Length: 425
Image 1 (cartoon, rainbow, N blue to C red):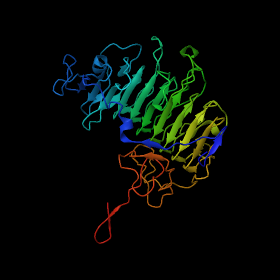
Image 2: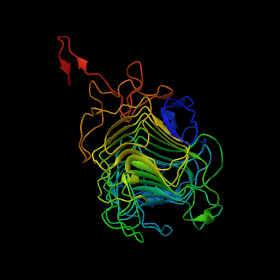
Image 3: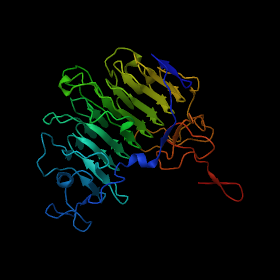
Image 4: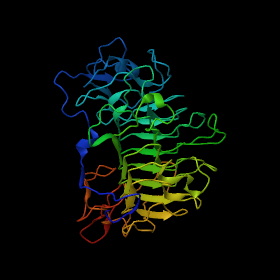
């Protein structure tokens, strides 16, 4: 084991290079791939293939897209309607078609646009494989902001190779009785059993998601997490077949002020939590993740005998004295180390290189207005496990800025000094 506390067995940590290209599965698309454009001044009768002739609604572009195609949202408008028929969901975007290996369907904000998706149900709902969603803001959804699961009407089932990157998901799931969150991958199902990461939840800012009503059939409030990877073992729907075996990377994310965990795995295995900053989550009183003690909820965690989880190079800052920083009751073959952990009621993993101290974040705001940059003197600076190498941080700054990688979602950038020795803001 690489220096960390583990449960069940030795966990070997290979050198991992996480570069900017990992966040863009659209690289290497076939020459005939089409880019469809969406803007509020457009019309669904347009062909959508140029910025001058965009569709008006995202759903129209989704229905036109196939493997290898990209859907570009070109403006900063708010999208909150559907217009075209979708299968059994009022989601603004229900992605019914799957991509292919090397040719995903990619839905993204283009040319520095920041569209807002606002709806009473899920905003994005994918039910296939090889799908990427990037660069959007999703708010005030009745259920999860960005979510997906396999299509129960289509066989063979497959919900795999999903990229959710560089999005902002906030203030979703308030009045859902379905157990929803900011980002949710529910019942991942094998497209294939290839090695390596199949799914990426990377570079997102998920904050203020929370449930205010009891989950149907459970008698208590649950979820409202920043993100969840849920039931990839198919315990709830065994007809989906054997448990999912692909690996998922959760990296470079900011999880702040959610009602449930910052992010956790539930009945799901093979997940790496690297270089995240989780702060001030677990805002919902009496939150129950299936247990009855302080391990019920945490900043980051895994629940219900999950296995092969790794927690490395994260900042986990708990504001609630009755919740853990990292929660992993009954985890199997799992490990954690090189984290900065502060506050809370203990941790499931305290590795030899963990630092139990204030990470000195720049701003401790829970309303989305703060940031998680490191202040000078932070114990996270230069303290990461150097075998897990990344090329950029959450803010897009190159890593490392100094000789060694920093822990958390943000790399420390020293302030510039003027010729007379004063700091330049």
